[in-house]
Image (cartoon, rainbow over all chains, first blue to last red; front, side, top):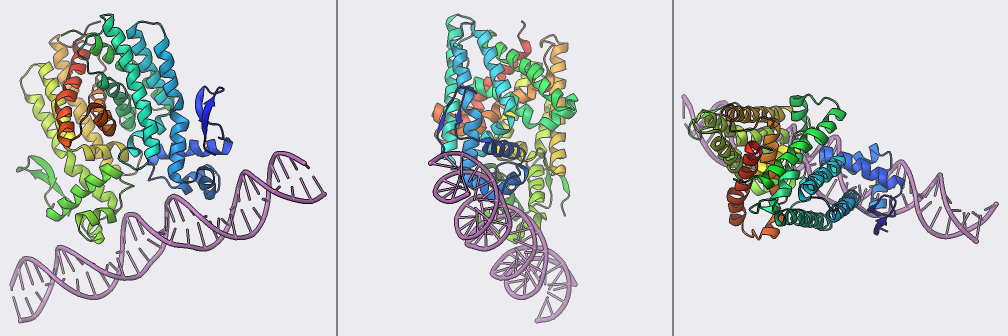
Length: 221
Length: 221
DNA sequence: GTTTAAATTAAACAAGTGTTTAATTTTGCA
DNA sequence: TGCAAAATTAAACACTTGTTTAATTTAAAC
């Protein structure tokens, strides 16, 4: 019932059994979870907005916890693939890092909601299955970063005293802190429409992060 | 009943009416809110661990929402002061930035719990009073950063194309992302005890952030 | 010691929670 | 058209939620 397989249409791992109604539920769940948190969202909230009966959520996913699991796999499965493809590209290390940052920003920006849930609902909880899936994703990301940076160090472009596992926290952390404080920055930077906000992320914020990581990697004391 | 005044003993704004029992409730609330979220924590959970009657929380704080308000003010009031003192110090801009980062790291690290709540429970909700208090804190922080950086730019030490409002997201975001993924990094870096974990934050992570911001500020393309 | 206010309690309250049941409707296929 | 499986529903289930009540105990002041 809940097997996941590779979908060559969407180029992502996805539940081949996902029909329109399931997807509709997942989309609503993502929206509400990200707005009000997992515990703060009731399945009646979801069912009301998705315009389905409450029982359908248990019927389709088994439970609220399993709905979260399905949501996470549904939303994170293609990021890993994108990173692995990037590693194969034959471009210089700095450009690769910039592309890595670009992937992070755009992919995570599309799925702000679920990544918010991932970070705030998943830790120190019993949702083991969801958590291990997320941990594997993080391990893969770290490996990609390690690989790119050692390439750059071998070529003598990057300095050698960088703490590699802390690169990702700086990249994603900067983005997340910005997004977590959205109302604050919307007011401060006059990003009154959703378009302006998204545009600021994919241009200015992206550039800031790329500039920061570049400086960190190539700057000599 | 809920007036706040400056306490010269602790050098912080605090509720002068806070007795032992109230503080005990606040401490337990912080722990549970940070572990299970605001919605995920019931006042019965709090009362059980704090070993008081459920009704005492309503009696003391009025409601669960007002308990959160009190907690935020109780925990964030002295950070603003520390930053204002820093601005007065007569040291060179780079050292000032490093001290700013040090203040952020140590202060936030002591209050991990409440800052987690602040970022994940406060946005897009109706808890207006709590939110405006937090917004004021952020505005103050931004002013401090702006002041320090223009000093550095005036002295010709810092480059001039830095996007100042994105400095804080990089500093705090890096720290937060690390902390949000604590289980992951504990396993990755073998930080098996709480002491090792805290030690890594106040040494290696702090150094990484200082190194990053320094590179960003002084590196010329 | 009496009085008055504060602190503390167990119980009750109404509303909301995730989940299950059992009945009904819709669907796809022979 | 008839039939079995799937989808959908309203209702009920047992439980938890935040808050309030009203009674009791403790503390302080006179």
